[in-house]
Image 1 (cartoon, rainbow, N blue to C red):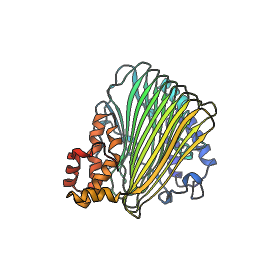
Image 2: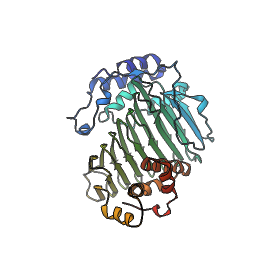
Image 3: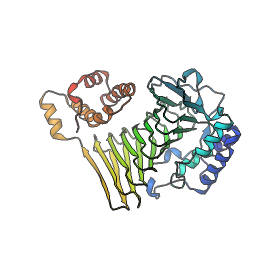
Image 4: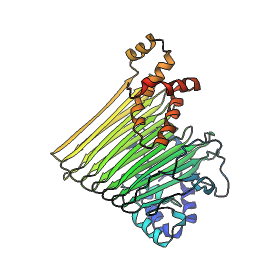
Length: 443
């Protein structure tokens, strides 16, 4: 295996809590046994991994990161902020009801440490996700959210992961473990953002979501890193019987961004709704690989991803639905639509159905198109300037998914963020946000 992470591997062994030693060693063994993917690796053949062709260092724990003016959602409820992988107590606060606990790995007592050790990796297939092994091999801290049976969290739990990009090539490890008891409910928001200083920060992030019988989780993951940021991460969910996972993902582009999303139905009656938006521009890159595993009967899933790719950017989407032999009476749908706003933009989309049961209802589809000239002409003939018309069409293309975000404060943060992303000037941003006719429109 490449030695580009040698220094962070060494630092992790020296700074991790003693009870994590077994987890680190497990990750090291699998990382040593694997190889860095390249263009000949099927699942990585469209990725440009040049951002990893350098040696990364561990974060200096004694240096305060210069974060500048990084904008991220301010939400009610509990918020934990990490800067360059280090906990920032002055920016964090915890407000949870009885029956819920939010614990950092580095502060876990003996009983909690034993729980975390037993649960870590139970939703991750490390043989298929090699960078999950690297995450374990460099693990020094993380967050454990545990919600007891029949407990309902009225307010979201927000995890904020900030990277500074100080000019050095630094490595940041992120780990989240969520365990929901039977019939519990919670909302979790993860936000990744950076100070676009021109420095390189490599984030290797893994989130594990374990849902008990009848549990419901609303999960949001926002990848707002831009510039030279590199992020290889994954979300791995295990759904017990009659549980529900509603998951929303947003990715702005950066030099390298690869996210694997895996949801496994392990109990009958489970449902997964997976929605996402990706918006690379310039020479940025975004890659989403999703897999929904239907391993038992009577489960449902719905997946919708939309991408708007501009300039010379590249997007990759690979969506897989895997119906196991025993998964009769499954209902699963997958839709991926892409809008190219430049003739130099590129998208590689591959929806997959792998079915081994004969009593199922499954559908999948993907489209790639440029902006509709008739729609553009219609707006132009009614006095709408070309730039404004293009923004209206782009914003309308994803507006349905944004409106579907159940967390209202988060939705209020996203709408102006996306309007600015398209408009690139405040006057047009305000006009788009005030334009009533965009509600529910599509391209």
